Amino acid sequence: MQIETFKVFCDLVETASFSRAATLNSITQSAVSQQIRALELRYGVSLIERGKKNFCVTSEGRAFLQASREILATYENLGSRLRELQNIVAGELTIATVFSIGLHELPPFLKKFSALYPDVELKLEYRRSSQVYNEVLEGKADVGLVAFPTKRKGIIVENFWKDKLVLICHPGHELAERRRVTLRDLQGEKFISFEPDLPTRKAIDRMLRHHGVEIAQVMELDNVEAVKRAVAIENGISIVPQTTVANEVRHRSLVAVEVESFDMWRPLGALYRRHRSISPAQRQFVGMLRETRWLEDPGFRSGKEAA
Image 1 (cartoon, rainbow, N blue to C red):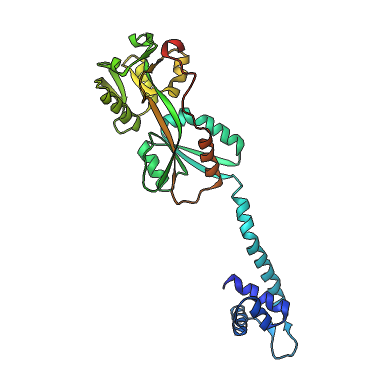
Image 2: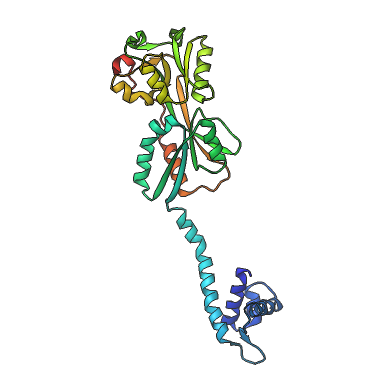
């Protein structure tokens, strides 16, 4: 049964004319009769009394008329109700993120978003970079956050942040006394690296190769917290995002030294699936990231100054 059938019946009762109901609905008078007969057969009742000169509606027909009007009113209001729902920011929002972003860059955004939209339940999942792309593509995550984002089929990527990459070392290391270093100054140094498949590791490797620098790789770890701990116990130096070592620099367990190079930046990107209906919560979260793009920390302090 189509929604138009209810309108045909209402028009028939209100005009008391098969021909007038046909005109109002741009169909034939025969089609009106067929639709009313189909309703009566479906529900096993008589809606219209036939065989009399005066048009008459049965008691069942009056009940059906009231129900039809309610159905039509609901249908007509559906569009406005859906538009209202589009402005209600509520429900669950699942964010898949790499470890470093989730721990260091993301918290201020989450705090602000939760204050603005308390009816949204935020669900945070820590994943490796490749897993973030997969979860977004498979619809398991509404938004993904990765470093050095790349284009993928079926995924929209929006860069929203740039984090400074800095050299970190133990306060007793000879480089800790430097205000800034070049990549060439790292020649032959013992180096704590991220694992080879991580985007930040790949970017650092490209930088070192570009400048012809060879380091003595002593350890490969899968997250920035493990890298920081290894450097803090004097196993070597490393290059990490500046925001991830703010606490260690403040407590003087590590020193962060600026690296003189134009490419010492780590772009961060937000991912969401192309051609997928975007919820109000997702729209507002991505919009917040988009509006708060950050390009450089003007208050960057070298390792010696911060210590």
